[in-house]
Length: 113
Image 1 (cartoon, one colour):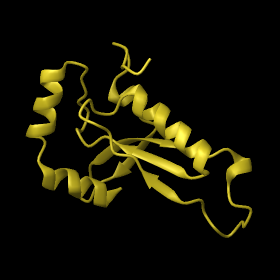
Image 2 (image 1 turned 90 degrees about the vertical axis):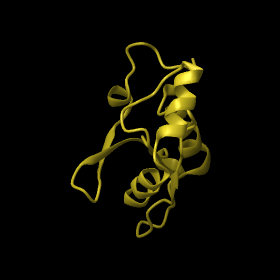
Image 3 (image 1 turned 180 degrees about the vertical axis):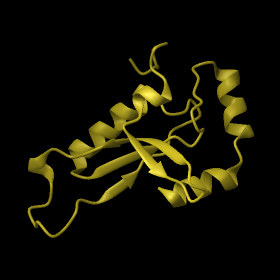
Image 4 (image 1 turned 120 degrees about the vertical axis):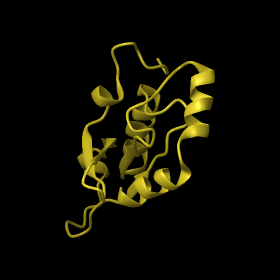
């Protein structure tokens, strides 16, 4: 399903912990392309795409989209958790998260990724 199940937290969905400049971490989901889609030139790493979640936060739907893009485009897709552990399926809370998360902090997290 596109929604996060009650047992799926941001922590359980993420598979990467990326260091932030303040010494803490950014949780993220990282999808890698299948070996046959990777560029045959061994010296070149596959391109990287950053996938920014919508106002629900990092959810199963975003992880599924990252997997699909990695497979279809042959790139590494990183979906960072810019809400820092918070997500919801309750629309008023989602709106609150989007409006109350400082844009400067989101930008800094994206720069760190």
